[in-house]
Length: 432
Ligand code: BG6
Image (cartoon, rainbow, N blue to C red):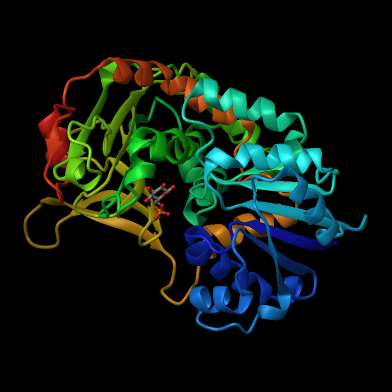
């Protein structure tokens, strides 16, 4: 089936950095070179050749693109857009919303009112999906007036990372892991996403967001769901979202007494808001009611301006005696792979143990598909396993609702950490 990909906000930052490079790789494959065309929508007249050159360094793919200029706030313009798209019954339209979330819901309404919502129209959304439970409920209800859930593709690019998908593959495909995947063998679970970068000038965005909304509610909660979910014997990837949802439903509502937040020094100057209470670091303790995970402490941790960039799921195994191997690490990024911490006899005349790592990594010349490439291809093929369902979004907000309420009411200044701190240093500072 031929696909027309409509990009709202084609001249924006996300499109330049992520979407267009991903599209270039997709358009160069045999499968998609004839069946995919792109319509860029922008507010100001912009030349597609210049947009492509800015992003890709050349305009060699310009014949696959066309441009439509419109004011996204003018409902009448959507009727003109519909005529321009001229979608045929044997074609599908994929509308990618590379626009601020504040206007995404209005675009959905205007598309619906103009009749750009036939069953062969799909929508690809970027996070954030609301800022709390109430706003997410509102967005989901409004969107449902014109689009069915199966037409909606909510992107969480962490789900589409190769190693995130591998959590399921490793767990399901290797008896080594499936036997021990329970609270009998596992002591605790940590999902970490530390970043070296600070907010990189995104003051307005970050002041409305903070670490809990930016990383914990979506990315980390989804990695956790992949770690905890049941993997049935007859596993079908298309049902992944329903298993992730079941795992999220078993998580208890996070207790504010077991959550910590902090802010890096210098943040308030950067956002020009003295006394800002926005957290750039968050650490959330959770537990699950699932009998398989009862009494297993879980922690989700993220922070900006830390000593290094690393996204990992760490599984701490219960020790039966002191010197035993005790960790399995899914390295989501960088250096994608998996490590198992081992104790071995230290080579030499003495009978001593030492810690080494059994590690799987991809060969250096093996190029992993980028997350954005993967989501576009899956949306074209109507495969939903990498996308977050409305119910998952709501459940994740619900899990964090008490923490959000408690933080909202607490006006005490946040603990400050030095830029470049290690996770260990911050945890020590906060007493985690
Ligand atoms: C985004 C957040 O969703 O993920 C950013 O808004 C964050 O604040 C980014 O830096 C991290 O993504 P990645 O793929 O670089 O780990």
